[in-house]
Length: 451
Image (cartoon, rainbow, N blue to C red; front, side):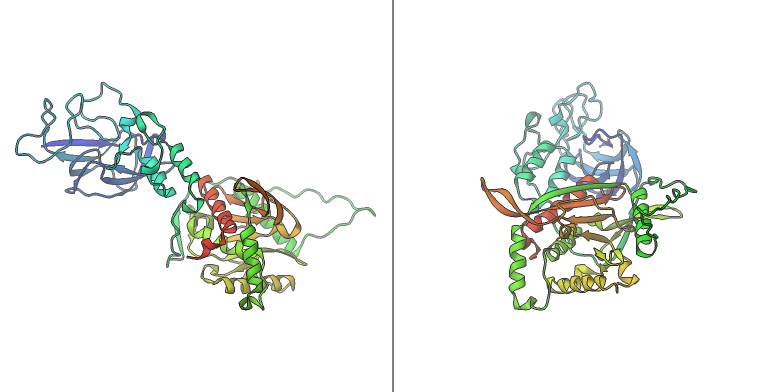
């Protein structure tokens, strides 16, 4: 019997350490080559590690939650001895891993050689993981393909010796539909959860900073006291701008099918007493997209013991409203549970109440994500500031007819721009991009909402 130690490999991202998230095996389990033995989390991704050996799991050397440096031992395997001269197991023994090309150790599939085989640097393709159908791809690439819904057997490989690269997977996903980026989960029964957050946040305004002196007034100027809604809004916006690192992304969208749906709903007897606008489809799109990328619906929370990220598994959908009192952001509670018609009624009530100046404080509290419809003012796009207590805000620009290329021909289409600002402490670039792409997908094809 031979005991072999598996050390944490460089999974191809150039990082020096990773966290053991969860073990998929336990001591005594029998594994085959390429069976997933654990999940690790690097600074860039969550990666499944396949077994480099066939045999029995011996000892787990790194606990779940531990941060391990590349090259550190994490698990041992026990397998039958291999005759280094023939590459076969002793007669009567059980099947075992093939011998190494040099040094007599077992080949670490996907990670080079183990044992004494250290004299030859293996090619990139040899360090990649070969699946049961013969596709060569490193663990991060396999993870990326799963997240994007890409079948690796259908990807054209451009890497050395037929290895599938990250660009190959991304290109294949782009050629497919954007609707396939991830599977849409169900809203969970647990309303909130917390996830670890970085140790520190960007600093805000220095303590003790005094406001600038009030300039003098004369007949050519007018002084407007800052109070009430304006005072609360200005304070909230300054707090948000100086505490949350904002990042804004946007996408231009062919919303012609959204306009067609709005026209049909307006003509429907079921909506005879309800005002319908493109904002209704936008609201449904944001709710749908937030379910697919939950972090946009989260919040950064500072506590006595440090910061944490609270992920809300419900949507209290805020709608920024310009009113005689100033900017208000009332929200629709548990909007994810509403039908299209009920959401339309809720938007009508919210808008009417805000315009009449009757929005209550309770209606403005507890929001999780906000929509600002700057299109009603004729604006194409903007970089909105996040509402405090939230991690994302989406701006919908004006919808106007523009020339658009359809099937190789330039045609007039109803075009708008979807922009989103996000708290970069909570949301990474791929998540915010996926979210905005999902919202745009619904505006392009509202039939996605039919699930």
